[in-house]
Image 1 (cartoon, rainbow, N blue to C red):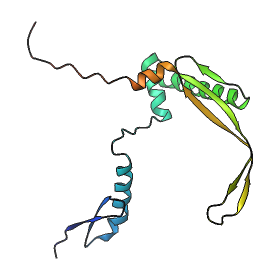
Image 2: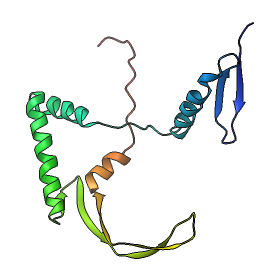
Image 3: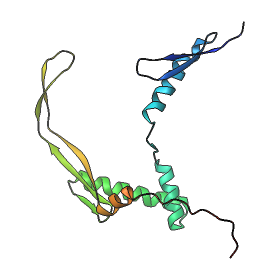
Length: 150
């Protein structure tokens, strides 16, 4: 018996495929399609700590070990300052600050029971003028090569 792929349109307009004879792949493919559809139209990319260390090593011509030490030192110093309640302002990049949230009343959406939400602190980041301009700048198109010799 020949297997064939069947398309099923889920309620959230995600196309999921499964093989009639091998339904086991159904859930994995649906999960993949759901994640993929959330990123359509957006270039979603995450730089990991390892990639950041590699980028610092490349830009500074330091070894990866020295770059890792520099990145770790920056992160530790930043954390210590924020825990102490200080504001960190890096001109052109942005400002990190810890803000206080007041205690407030809330409601459990399942039970509709009123609850008290305690006061807490949260980290904020405000982007600086230079980085905002860099992010919002139009991307330059690559110059076309005409093949003419000078």
